[in-house]
Image 1: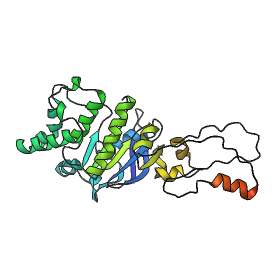
Image 2 (image 1 turned 60 degrees about the vertical axis):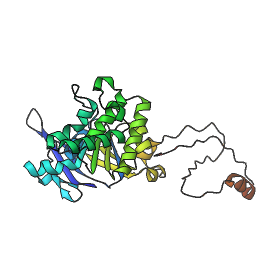
Image 3 (image 1 turned 90 degrees about the vertical axis):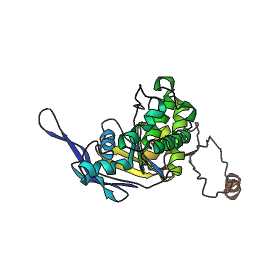
Image 4 (image 1 turned 30 degrees about the horizontal axis):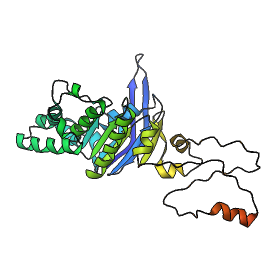
Length: 294
């Protein structure tokens, strides 16, 4: 799992002033779960991503992976422990002059893994992302979704326990987006991953995330499991996740909105029973069914 506690990060502006970007941010992502991080531009999502991957050192606070505080490490110790974090970028960032197989093998080759083990691991990962038949293809011969799948396979090469997906579906068409999100959900379960999904797409959150955190002005202003947020009428984040359709015009004195959860048993004849018990005329103005997280 990943545990971020009281994270602070500032940058110095051109005129010498310190500008705080992350202001005491805390977040936990358990293993075998996907937590989405959303928020407006400039809220601190990209800075958080760079701090999680240790491309940026936070000013203070801690980033613990499976209990190990990576933010307190440096040099060889940091490089060794950083292998626990795999990163999928907005663009797949594949090397254009290397085949799909060679791109996935790259982290292993840099680490000095023997050729026999590289072949076994790359073969396993290409099969896992469904692209064994594209092993010899160049990036230019792959679709956007296929390139992102190869990027995911490469991110998993060193067997990380945390996967950071930074706008991993941005720019993909709807079909490719759905395919990549389904893959992330399967890999979450297959490899027991703690996945941080940084995105601005609420559709991606509804489809793949177990929980969501909203960042504004460098802090988390709302966090919760998807089903809990949707069940709370006062949750602004829940309203963003599932905007209500406008109700049909009515002259009634009382207008009610009712929501159901699949895991809570509800009598299906409640409308007729309510009408009979209270001698009411109840008009059903509209409704819809939304599938959340698959």
